[in-house]
Length: 164
Image (cartoon, rainbow, N blue to C red; front, side, top):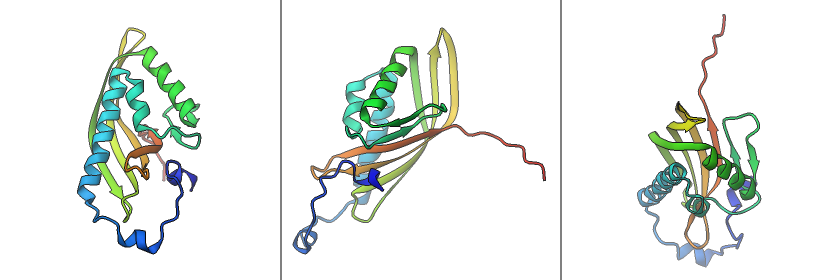
């Protein structure tokens, strides 16, 4: 699973380092992730690519899957290019997070999340709204202690009528 180590330096920790670990405050770590997700939504609303870039890991092996069929983005440069395009074509973007769940591994170096979003914007002078977008992803914690987004996936719910 290459994504989970994308922003780590891959240093090997010995037993002495493990004993020196600070006690992990899971709720504090979850709060940091939640703040980053809120910041990501706010930065997307305002078109602040510089701030978005501080949240994402700037490596070639990060991924973002969007809601459109062609949105299978590999690497920060592809993600950045897609976001720049979004920022220039959409106006008055408003994102509301309606549900958020965050989990961490036992060492608090990997976190994964699920959010539901309502996405409102103006496109070609027409007000549009997409409710209930699902956003899942993975953050990893760098050796410097910063959480970085390494994988994201947006999806839209659908209803399928299945005949028994």
